[in-house]
Length: 508
Image 1 (spheres, one colour):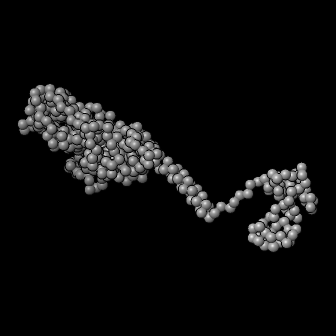
Image 2 (image 1 turned 135 degrees about the vertical axis):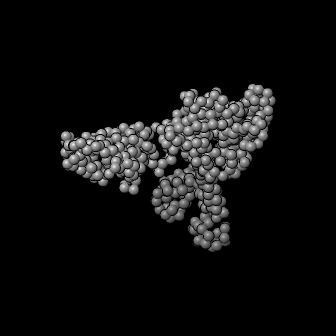
Image 3 (image 1 turned 180 degrees about the vertical axis):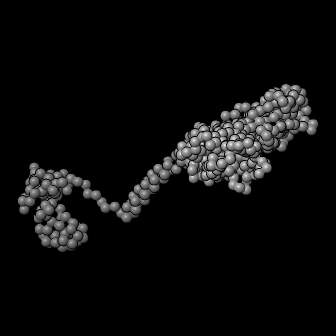
């Protein structure tokens, strides 16, 4: 019997392994010279006999020992413990999470994404939120909610809403166009990603006056009093926005609104230089639309009557702007504006009969009373010709007449004209009717549509010695449409019977 040195189990004498625990028993030395003490012993996988590294086949059963050799050469790896496996999994998870976080942070804090968030903040028009993302490199300027409120209020005005839409688009995609801001890097997020902010560029305004003792105010707050002639003072830094600059001297004062914003303001440079000299101006405005309103600095000061209006006793200021507006049913028409310089239209030099005291504010594409008069003269001249029994009034002439009316032959008033002509031609006693017109007023109701009041004078000539009959009628609300492609008018309607007035029936 052979006792196992490991567990003490009794095994058969010729056993090579303990049948209880599998422990290998010590193998005796092989023939001298074939294997030595340092030779590596391993066992045949088929019969279990010990063999040496030097043989390729088991001396006991003849099985190949190549696999056994490889097995003996390769190191035996011990199995990982549960704690080791958990540690590896946790470590790999942390690495993956860090990688995902880095890639997510790289996208979230990228330049385009930061610009997009800046754009969304400005879109709220919340001064407090905007103040949190704005900085300034001007040491004398302090970013605050109150200051940003001044900026926001500028773009909340109806005339600046379109510019604000462009501002947001440029902020999100092309911030170099902003003019009042620059993009600057201020530190890093998480110590890894660049942090971008908007740096505001404050504005300054220089005020000059040649009058001593004038109080100078900004948004109602007194900032200076002029000392002597050629006085100059500069105010700032100010937040880009809209400001009221006021000058007071004795009982006179001048208030002007300055747009101190660079973005989409071609006049920023001139708006930043303001002269206040308290003298009065007077002038006459002419325009081609009756009833047009005259505005000075967007405040109504008069209405065009009979083609003109006189404007007097206004205190001049730099940038004084005059324009005419005319509201129609569908839109508001606006003339070109006129800026009055310091030496123009002085009140002491006003002369209503002098061209030097007059400015013209015509509207483009507007037809005058003279244009309407010319149209009516042509129409009634043809009508007079058609009434004569010595002229022809056939299909061709009817078609020509229809061209003066909207919808041509289908127009009700055109049919009345045809009837009028045919009644004269078929009359036994009437030779012809001569017609003349006089335009009394025109009013534009919408673009290319005019309401016209005009007189029509009829002189009926008879075939015998009957005296001519002279009659006068008035069309009070004739509606004419102007076709710019054909450069002519057409009669839409003559206003109906309720807008037709007899002034002189000629004794009939």
